[in-house]
Length: 324
Image (cartoon, rainbow, N blue to C red; front, side, top):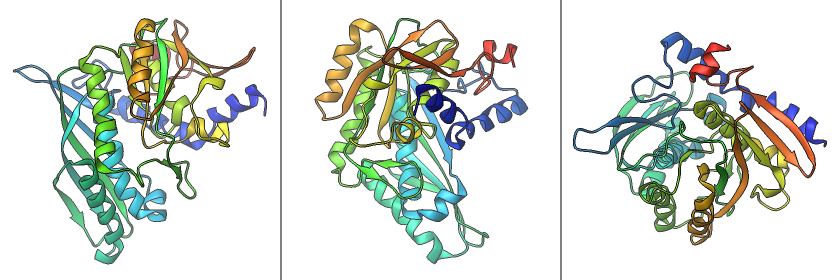
């Protein structure tokens, strides 16, 4: 596949286009990145009077995904929200769940996944909402946390190194583009890996970042670029990925533990080394630019994946809204 075909195919994939729903909601609610909590970040950050921030994150899940793999959906309900808190430089404090199911038997695998993940990551489930008379399974989860130092989506600067940090120890789940790296991991490793993000924030080593969500590396880099009013050039040869993986699938995949970090060049080596010390793959995969777009590079070939100024993605940055 040519680089141009790869970029074009990613730009029209449902995993990428699904994020456009966010822009419709933010327009209806008249939210921008300047609104309270700074929408566009992975979690709302609310300053505390005594210093630091309270963090709040929430996720709702695709019904088809929940129905296809309910145990994993329950696990993801915890995992993805904890990643959002970690991506902000925070530590999670509590989980609430909202479940819908036709009956208790249908809900059981999803509840088991929620419980097992909460135990593995050491964060308590403290309540929620339950409806066992719904027409189908569905799930939403919310998490609270705290941070002493923030990693924001709005602070990347042209010239920054773009680092991808991913846990490659895992396997694909069936059907959806989900890489599951936590199945055989001991709780101490899961908890320590997430805590690394707060350690990096508190050490002042990271300028901006996001966890790699649905939409994968390319979709997440696009969200980070638009929030920070910059662009990124990504060298596909530098992207850490499991051996034998189709690059197109990996670039749009949810890797379970994965973060994109925008880092001052003189701090990039130390950031990568801290991940490597925990057997996590981390590499400089590109750099931030002053162009409002994500460009892919493979050798001497270049292809544009998305220009967020011409086609806003989240619609949260003033420069994107002005050109929408």
